[in-house]
Length: 226
Image (cartoon, rainbow, N blue to C red; front, side):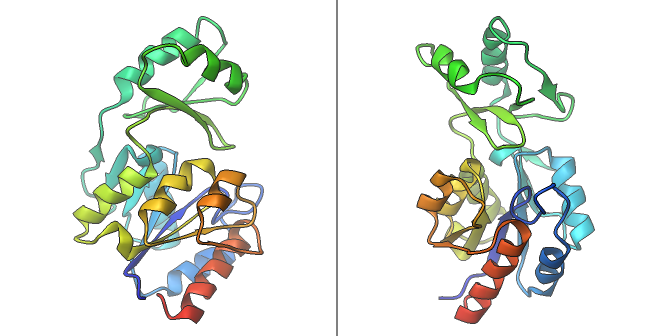
């Protein structure tokens, strides 16, 4: 079994607990001889900047799969989904004081500050016809289309790269990484991951955060898989 690329979440996976980039993880990523794609719930300019700073070529999945691009200066591809999210946001705004994050840059979803009751919000939306879901990534709460996730983003990006999603190893830590791990050929969760990502993973590291990412890559190298 040999994989052709790696796709990695950013926050909680290649960062320290306080959200700084984990320097040993960055050093390890730079040694790889295959493409490394960053995948995030954050906006595409954030993902591109992180990719550039690490020393990668800017191939990223952003907005939880809604935005993808194959290189730093290429035109990004966005999947429609924002209109339905806006309808859900307007409805929820009648019940909670909501604060949008990066509203001028998000094209496919809405990210909110984590200062309201997500379980109550989910129950309020449940009987309605909005084709959206609410996801808490531990860094923001996202109102996103049910049809868009990091897995669909990986499928789309893989085709743009001339690869199959199963050619990738996926590494992540959060509920929004679950579909990405399932779409990839092999999925690894770092030890600080939540319960859902642990169940979806083919392998779980013993180390957390960026140390876990380093362990994951070393595990793959030891197996001869990358």
